[in-house]
Structure formats: structure tokens, C-alpha cells
Length: 207
Image: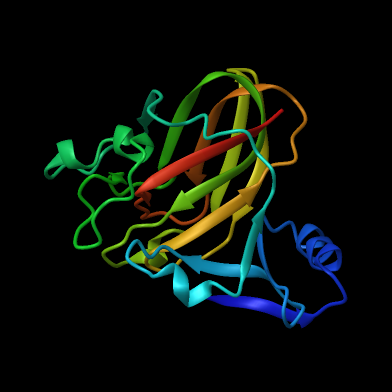
């Protein structure tokens, strides 16, 4: 895990550093007062908690993941074995097996592929967490814009991930929009031969 690191005076100072960099997650070691923020995080389903037991994990307060098992659709689906790559796999609550991209959303190759998720109500969106593909080619996740919609005519760009990503990366995009929204769209906006692959999308809401 690659982070910015600094010895700090307190947990509060660590939280302040994280907020300034618009990081959703940060880590604090109480024993040494060491702060880790602005991290590149990778998903590891089999990692032992003992490896990081001295670190305390913090993130922006949220209520729940409002994207879980909600309606999702996309600009396209990868055409071969397409049933394994449909948009619905990105909101099934599971990060797919690392050995393939099956049960992940995978678009066909196009200029600006996107996935759109309809939440189960109108919410203030706190942050969005993306799980990159686990089997390889993680660098294909790049230049992803986060759009939030109130309706078809009222939307705004809420965040951006430049990338390129890495395999198994967990990307967190902070959303500071203060309008109730019910649709989230993630779209690659640069390049001409792109495939958007996401094993899970979580949309965390605030009160």
C-alpha cells in the first residue's frame, strides 16, 4: 500500500491531512503517532487482519451503500460470454474471483464507455468506492469521471480518477455535491479504445 506518511501530533491532525487531500480513507498508528493518507489501496480478500493490527483504519462517515443490488445498465457489454460481464455484477455485493473478470462489469471497447446505477432513493452522496478488476490489465481503468444525477437534465461532475489504475486497486472518489441525487454514472472520458471494467461499485450516502 503506497501512501503519504508523516509523524503527527494527534489523530485530529491526521484527519486534517486526509481531508485536505480529499482522501476518503486514512490510517493512524496510535503507538507511534504515524499518519498514512492519500493511499493507493489494493483489495486482498485473504489478508490476515494481524498484518495491520497496529494500524487504525478510518474513513468518512456514511450511512450505507445505496447501490447494493440496485438497477444498473451500461453503454455496452463485452460481447464474448456476455452474461458474465453485465452491469448488474458491479452491484451484487461481491468482489469477483481474482482468476478472471467473470462476475465483474466489463464493457466492450469503445470511446467513452460508462456504467450507470439507479439508487433506491434520493440521497446526498458521500463517496463512491470502485473495485478494479482482479485478474490483470488494471491499467485500463483511467480518466474515470463520476457524474451524479437528480434527473436527466440536472447532473454534475462530482469527482475524477486520473489513473492509470493497477490490478486489484480500490479507488475511492470523494463527492462533495450537496444536492439530493438518485443516479450515479462512471465514464471514461479520454482516449478512443477503452474498456471499462469494475468488479464492484459502492455508493455511500450521508445523512
